[in-house]
Amino acid sequence: MELEMSVRTMKIECDGAVKRGFLRKATMGLAWFGIASTLSVSACGQTLPAPGGLPLSLAMDAVGETVRVCEAKGLKVAVTIVDPDGVIKLQARGDGSPIHSQEFSYRKAYTVMSMGPMQGVDSNSALIGKVSPAASNGASILLMLPGAVLLKQNGQAIAAIGVSGAPKSLDDEACAQAGIDKIKGRL
Image 1 (tube, rainbow, N blue to C red):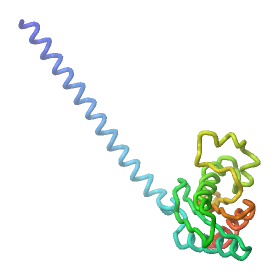
Image 2: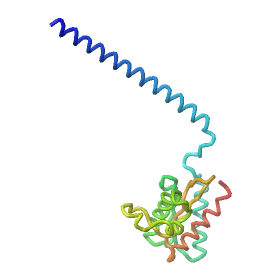
Image 3: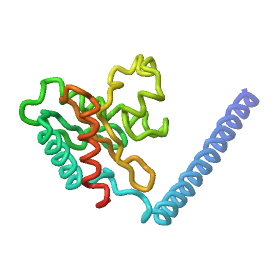
Image 4: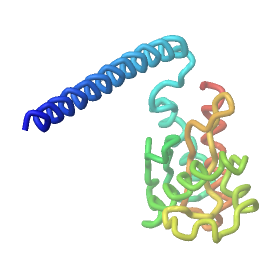
């Protein structure tokens, strides 16, 4: 009985020491991680892009120019700007644009934002030439049609403009490019 008791006590003490050692190491690891994170953020904080990428005021100008250029050609379109995560930054449906155009403009912008950078292209029309339509199998949100263009800053994609509603998708893409051109010099 005495031997059994001392073995149990020893096991508990050993387990406690192991747990204390683990906790001590974990605490020190977290402390070092916190210090390293703070130093790295303060060292590079000035070079990181602003949250959200494209400022809303520039997004509004790009959408306005895109719709204006399309309307001047007699085209009724919807326009969507997405951020690098494919999240809608701004969306507008022009007067008289087809009901599906709003959804398609988003899907076109999402497609070029998600696939363009890794394929080294800046537009859906260029993407179509490099990627098999089968690449979108299983990803129903992708739309392999012309009509979207990437906006880059310092070589990084910060937004994409997608347009839909014109009878020819290449006309959508020309309007998207006009929106990009309107704001490119102000980034």
